[in-house]
Length: 350
Image (cartoon, rainbow, N blue to C red; front, side, top):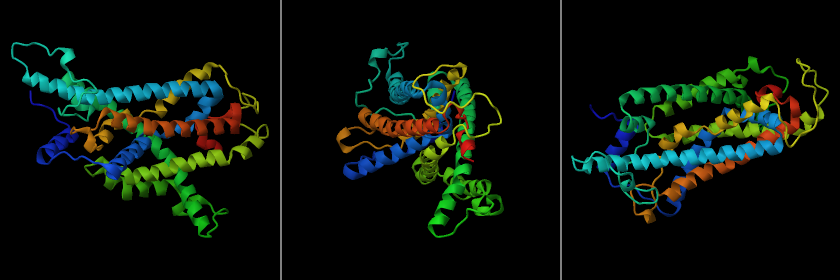
């Protein structure tokens, strides 16, 4: 059976064969790592942020933080595990090619360890993982899973962009002295979220999606991150005003009755749904391999690939500020609407 190669792996092998490995030092090394951290942060921060306020309301402030930290630990461990597979599958394949034909298996203890510096081929796609370890049929299964994962991620991400882009444009106009408070947004194209989202996709995201290297996506990452930060700023800025309205809002559904206070620990049937919401908020594993593929080793690494310390700096540097951002957003949202915090938080700021 012919070897199945993903486009990413084929490109990386061609690049490695055609030129010397790129190593960085000094400021260039930090900039390369910083760009990867920014891209991974953008992959982590998604539409899950709009449901974390609800998770805090059904768990309580203290219990929410405890569960979120556990989710962060699991997420970091699994990302590190994926990067370990990237190295060790290449090592296993190289040893299989070098083994004596009479040998049936390569002993596990001979596989390169995480800390060992080696220049075996690295693989940066789940399709290649599946093909090398399980065969072609598992590759098809992985492709189906990734298709649904990416569709859900893109759809939910577009929801936030559509709802926040008009606010960003309006803020820019207000800074230039153009007042739009009394204007119907649906009547003006540059304040219509659907039109702005369509322009964003056609003019910026579609051309960048056709590029071969993921580091070019840093441009759209900045725009997406700006929308996320504007949402977080909205939640924090509106907290006193929203909290003052507690008990004065006529809800369509009268239950539960507003309590106008927060709790450290709370338990209910809805608490079960909070954990999947937090897990969804850290689902960036589909992007981690392609982002790490753009990370270059330092000159002191003495290897063609980034060291384990450098890749772990990437993970921790991305997850740490994201966790702080999540906690601030969830707790400020909970302190705004208390036990009436909804899972689709944007609707309460409409």
